Image (cartoon, helix red, strand yellow):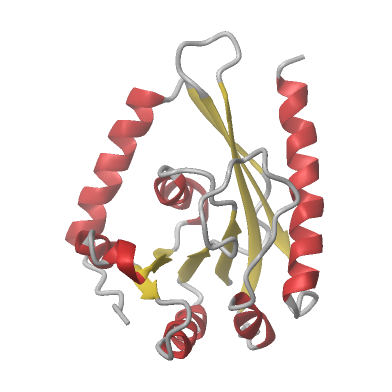
Length: 207
């Protein structure tokens, strides 16, 4: 397992880079949601639809959540981009015994209310239009042992061009009451319900 070795300097550099590419490549960015419990750590469940996903979540974290950023990545991908470990990334290797260490690290991070952990339960990149979402089972252990000082937070990132040359990005987010989601199936059902609402709101933007 590759552990997070977060450095303020590396994270500051990454944040500068993300701000730069967001301004360059997007017409607008909208954040849709309300954060009612800012004093809790966040386990953020996101849709994995593109290369951009982690950058988008760092972007909203810097503007809305204001937490110490962490993200779980596939070990083979993180090995190619070790710089990310200095920005809060850590690895998981599905099918390997080290998965237990990765999940244990997740739960340890969530005990600190200053942290957020970004998790993509789909496990692979799929189109944002792929619906309903199917999640892998690894997240269930985390759900069952989620610290009381933390909360689930759903995030859905959707892009559309409309009549502009550059796309508009909308990041929808919603807090979920702690302790209500304890299994992968419950998480899938709840997240897909939120995802459907986001798609409905996104379609209204073009009207």
